[in-house]
Image (cartoon, helix red, strand yellow):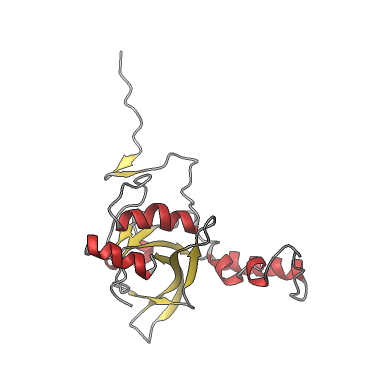
Length: 209
């Protein structure tokens, strides 16, 4: 009688999620459970984020678009350019600052003369105090990145939907909200979240700006 081989979801030491499962952590989970543990050489909850060198790949050539990485912002075809200011990642329970989130856009060509593409990177790093502590343990500064391609047609449709929903742009705030910043959605960031399901997670060290 033929013995059936067990189905393996491991490739190159990385767990491959079975069909129907999605790896979709919150910003806090990504920083606390993965980035912080990686920086301090602690066991990870699951080996679902591979470690690669992003400077060896253009975004469309990433094997899984997810990786741990020591960051370099230039690639063979272009470079990643920051868009806007970094935003804090705050723990839900303690309200403690656990990380910073930065949005970058991939530009084709040489710096200062490149043209923007639809490829977006969300880059997460530890606060400076934790980063310094991790440096005393290991020589690498890690960051975790999520890389995806924005779909232009989806972004346009989302804008049309919001315009129909909110009319002239005025939004009624819930009285329970303490401030408008906690109640209003950052439209640009929401559009960035509308990327491919094959988006990337990567941990990287920002040695270059």
